[in-house]
Length: 378
Image (cartoon, rainbow, N blue to C red; front, side, top):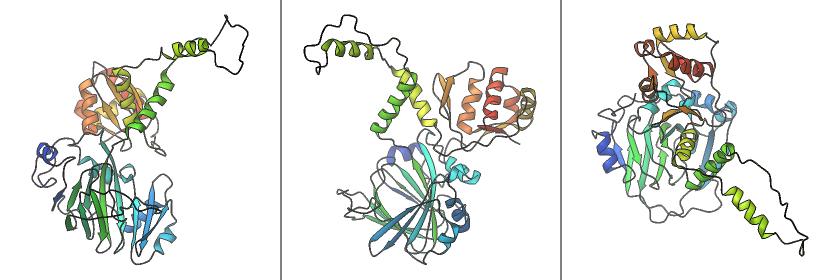
């Protein structure tokens, strides 16, 4: 699954040329990026996803420049009673619920999985849209069924309209105007303003990328340190003397606490371990399906015959020294390392590779299988 994009996806550009010329720099419109693509979900299937409490969904309605925003889960009957025009249903993380959606997301594996976020589908009635806005991350907008008109371009003024439930630009002056048909795709870098309006009932598949704020990373890192730090001892002041001002914090107390806390250390290895865990942490509500337990020997026979594949919910990453799977980590084993890295890159291992795995790697995969992180597969 990993490797170069198809010749159509980036308009004939190689991945290297796309990254050098467009990534984080300027928009790219590709006609026929995914030939014969008309979407993966019907309207009724999207309605069904929007009723689930483990799938994030939103409904945006507009009328005369005013917008309303409602969050799911929704009742299917309510969705069916929506008006004929000017609404959009947004369903996020569909790659966690559908193998076909996950396969579409993995078409973008010429970009690292550490940056790849999720696949969102929007279904819009004619005239539907979420207003002119900008995203803080890169996004590919792949047109499914129907047509959507996109106006887009860089904006100097990114101020927002007040008192609206959506982040809608106060002023929007697009430089480009294009109507996308099934299989067309528009790439937009961060902070590139855009406004998509459905010409007729249509679906758009948005491939988004992770761009966490440094403040968010700092808070998560401090949580990581809290879970890993281990300071021994307890505060004590055997040399305490009678207080002249009982409301004053004793400078000796300040120094003792400062000395104790100054023993907390972190280095590059600590940050690398945190980052791997952070990037693979499953989202809220993600539940891994578990199969009937297999003995170690039965599992070994099964994967030697069928091969193994990661569950679509699993995120497996690696660096030079560790493996990271679904928020956990362990040292990269010497034996079987190449096979595990291939599993992370390609999301599966064929039977011939599984048959040659060392016992320690088979034991690790068996453990992951028990947690539902991967499955034996034909």
